[in-house]
Image (cartoon, rainbow, N blue to C red; front, side, top):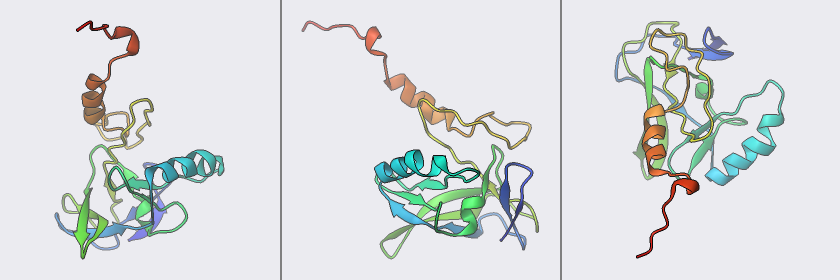
Length: 162
């Protein structure tokens, strides 16, 4: 893998060698923290750093990998609505790892991308991938729509007298 200037956003990662569909490409490495710690770091530390990004990857509801200050170059992989890679949580010897796999054959020097599936009910992040079927946002709009159906504004609740 080699970092370089991305046509999508800032810097990205480019394949030094071709990868076949299904190949393990790279592991997303960083410090494992609780979501509350990740939220506090982002709100009070990282958002104030000029020109710096936040590189968080949620493993599950209890753990987030923070690669902002320490980790592999995998944190530079950009989002795409039509990605050439995908991520999976893989358990090896009792430890969970985030592994990036090739979704399709990847050519030498092609930029690596995956779908971030960012989840937030109240925040939408613009997508810059530029692909014809771009959603316009990095968000996982399907999952957000399903959760939104479960939430009803307080003013719309009907008082039940049972």
